[in-house]
Length: 257
Image (tube, rainbow, N blue to C red; front, side, top):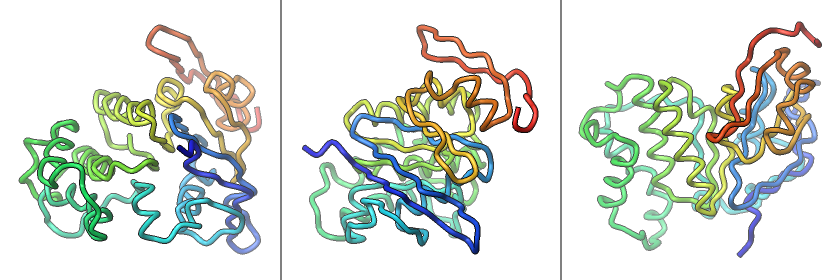
């Protein structure tokens, strides 16, 4: 079984004379939950979109070598923009995640109804199943879109700020779910602004600054005082506990501090 799910080599996205992403290179293997961290404007979303072939780029992404139908079976993507234009039910919206498999006549391990109901239950959305998606709060919709992502059951999951709009309990539940996806032998690439969640749940972190990956490694090795000051301009406390790493920002260091 091929352990590598994504290979990025010298991926570059230019806008005019400016590099939004510059010479990004990394790989992601089965069993990894890789957190993409960095300040606003660092290039995290652009890197994800370029890796998926949704943004024109130079360099290599192994996903873009696949035909669109095969790519849809290999990777599920949760974008930042989670607007829903039509008042479809939550159940029907989640069911849309199964279209890549059903559309080409592939065997679905369970019936559509069974799989969708199972995911709705896992995400604690059963009570909302018949509600129009357009009537949901921001946090409720974020959970529904995550359910649509998970129902695809792809080897690789890419999620752009999935914890946004969620309360603390739902953030923990969501990150527990993403980590379990990786622990089950699939792969996860997730962008996060909450460094505490990144430290605790990710097996590996990629830190971006001004379009470049400036650190790549285990959370303890990436979230150093030097990287936190250079990339985020903050000072933080980090404690290794039985529940995992706990990181708490405590002060600004000043630009370039």
